[in-house]
Structures are given as C-alpha cells and as structure tokens.
Length: 347
Ligand code: NAD
Ligand code: TYD
Figure (cartoon, helix red, strand yellow):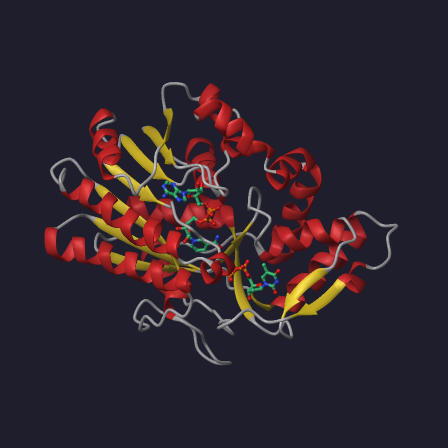
C-alpha cells in the first residue's frame, strides 16, 4: 500500500486515522485524502499534517458521488489501496432528510467500488468502515457477532447496510480484495458536536440543557476513537481478505450514565457552577430509536490480537479536556466559520 486513498479524511474518525497513520503506525506510503467537505468535514482537523508530511500527504476536494472525478483521482495518484470512511453519519439527520444518505453512503460507495474494480490489477485492498447499527437493536441479552443477520432500522443504518452488501458482492463477484469493519459508537477529539458525547460536554460546560432522548435507558457500546483507528490498521494490514470484523469497546453504558459521568467529570475539572446533573432534561424520544447495541469482537481479538486499550473513565476525561482546551475549534465549527474558510480556499 503505497498510495492509500482515504475518503472522508476531514471527518471525525477519518482525521484521527490520518493522525494515527503518520504518528503511530508503520505506514510508509502516501495518503490521498479525498473529502467533499460537507458540514461534517473540517480541514482544521488536520492542521499541520500537510506541512509535516509534504511528500506523503495530498488533499483533494471531491465528492464520491462524482464517478468521473474518482476515475481521474485513482489514476493521477496511482491509488493502490482505499480506506473508505466518507459517509453521512448522523442518525437524527437521516430521519429528517434521508436523501443524502442514499446518495453518499450507497451510490458513493458503489462509485468507489467501480473505480477500484476497473483497476483490479493495481488495487491491493479496499477497506470499508461500517457500523454495528446494521445489525439492528438488541434486547437485554446477547451481542452482535459477524454472523448476526442484518436488520437495519434507521435510514442511516439501512444505507450503511446497503454499502456493506455492495462491498461484499464486489469481493465475491469480481475478486476485489476487501475487508469490512463494523464498529460500535466512537468518541474522542474532533467529533462534530451534534453527536451525544461532544454535545453533552459542550452544553454542560456552558450551563445549557442536556437533552436525553426518552428515559435515557438506551445502551451503546463506547470505543475511544484511537482504539478504532488501530483496529482498522490491523485489519488492513493483517486481516483476511473478504472478511468482516466487529470492533467494540467492551463498554456498554445507558445514555443517562454517559451523561451523568460527563456532568460529574466536569464538576470535578471546572468546579464552581451548580451541579451539572441539574441540566439533564428528558426530551421526546427519537423515532425508531434502537434500544441496545453491544459487540462481540472476539474474532478480532483471536485472529489479530486486538483489544481496546482506553478505559471509558480515562477516555472520557481526555475527551472532555480536549473540548475544553480547543474552544476556538469548537467556536469555528459551531458558528460555521470554518465553512467560510473552506469556500475561500476551495470554492
Ligand atoms: P463524520 O460525519 O464525522 O465525517 C464524514 C466525512 O465524510 C466528512 O469529512 C465529510 O465531509 C465526508 N463526506 C460526506 N459526504 C461525502 C461525499 N459525498 N464525498 C466525499 N466526502 C464526503 O463521520 P465519522 O463519525 O467520522 O464516521 C466515519 C465513518 O465511520 C462513516 O462511514 C461511519 O458510518 C462510520 N462509523 C462511525 C461511527 C461513529 O461512532 N462515529 C461508528 C462506526 C462506524
Ligand atoms: P448518537 O451520538 O447520535 O449516535 P447513534 O445514534 O449513532 O448511536 O447518539 C447516541 C445515543 O444518544 C443514542 O441512543 C441517541 C442518544 N442521544 C440523546 O439522548 N440525546 C442527544 O441529544 C443525542 C444527539 C443523542
């Protein structure tokens, strides 16, 4: 893998992955970061990378729905591997306007697969980053394994499920060397503050209400983003081609516990305000809200020796500190200021 195309590299996990590859992995090649810079894509997540690695990093603003642009990029940069993050990723947005989810997640993934298939002799790997949400919702018992039937419930998870099936089919039908990872909920630096953890950190630190959907009993399995990046790289370098790997954090928590933990940590780190738990407000539930996700990642542990290294207590403290120390990043993201910068630089 000398010319690795990373799609969605300006988003939350993609930018963490690029930092990880350059600073913490044995990757020696070049990264071509392809991103359309939607509301969730922020080049400021990669500040310093182009300067630190001028020979080994290229950014290209492009849309994965544009098949012609993809063909040109695959050839111009002699792409020989793909790590595909680009997606519309927020469930609440998918409920309000599913169109972009079908376009980017399904049609965009199809376009990338086509570009790879047309260059089969050169492509060493197509890694597809997906979610545990494709498996649907669990009751009190059980865990998602790689054999669990797909039962996506939201437009987001349905579009990711469709893309997973396309990736698998391109391996089975055309022999494209693929790997797929289905991961649980991530948290950490650079996450757009519409998702539960950064939203709660920022609202709580500003004394604003903390909107918990329903009764807060819904359970998610939380994974620190750097652990996810490490798992993806291990799968890409040592995983069996054509295989799917579940990635999880072994940290099942009800939403209310997550929010209370954030409140208590903030009280400890920035004392003085009234107890943040008083800001918790139960609001109308999300339609079709999946009750519980929980991942069995024993295949990844058995075959590649991967386990998460960050505990929730240490990971959430790091994350809270990161958001408190990056107020400027937060303000530019929330005000849309970074979008003005993107228009000035990229049109
Ligand atoms: P994100 O929303 O933070 O970032 C998505 C990135 O994709 C942005 O940079 C955006 O500009 C880019 N993008 C969107 N549409 C595009 C298009 N048409 N063409 C090119 N670029 C486009 O998402 P994230 O949380 O970093 O998630 C990355 C991937 O990981 C997604 O595929 C998501 O389904 C998957 N995933 C996320 C989580 C999680 O907890 N965040 C968990 C499991 C899997
Ligand atoms: P989210 O971060 O949107 O991730 P996902 O829906 O992909 O799991 O939400 C995580 C959980 O938190 C989910 O059960 C919905 C809930 N939630 C709230 O209770 N309040 C909020 O404001 C948000 C954004 C999410």
